[in-house]
Image (cartoon, rainbow, N blue to C red):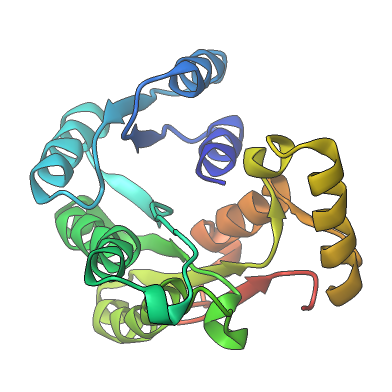
Amino acid sequence: MGRGIVLAAARAGASVATCYRTPGDAVTSLEHELAGTPGKHLVVRADASDPDDVERLLAACASSLGGLDAVVNNAGDYRPLPYAELTDTVWAATLQSNVTAAHLITRGALPLLSPGASIVHIGSTVAFIGMAGGVHYTTAKAALVGMTRSLARELGPLGIRVNTVSPGRIATEALDALPAADAERQRATVASFTALGRFGTVDEVARVVLFLTGEHAAYITGQSIHVDGCV
């Protein structure tokens, strides 16, 4: 979803800065696609949950872009585990990657934001419906909802809006990587419990994120917008 949001913003005319943790073909192809869009784009190797990396990333944003009109916190990690098997290490890592990363990026980006700027957290529908085997992940995504509400109140007087986009089941490269039979079973399962009877697409999430960062959402703040096909 992060890749889709970055490319959607670039194709809409924005200059974008994004980061990645692990080099590879996905990074190379993203850089190539961004090079084919207008604007000045920045792709930095950085872990959004590491304070030193975040400081370096935001310094690069300030140097290259001067300021930021929008921040999208999409970094996160999830390893499904039954609650009885959930270790302290996995619990802490899940909160670090999903919540602390959003906190570090948001706090560090404040000096680069001006009135009219927008912050969007990528949450999850599971924060509202729960998920067996994902207590740690659900807790982290629920924390983003509370963070959004409080930040919206604190930053509102500065003219900065804060919202969460809560996707449901979205067809990403992880679905494509499954064996065909497994992927088909996943599609059938999702079709059985969503009102629209299908996975969402990355583009459908990206379009909502772009809406929230734009002027048409100028009076929307403190909200969690569900993009889940009605689960």
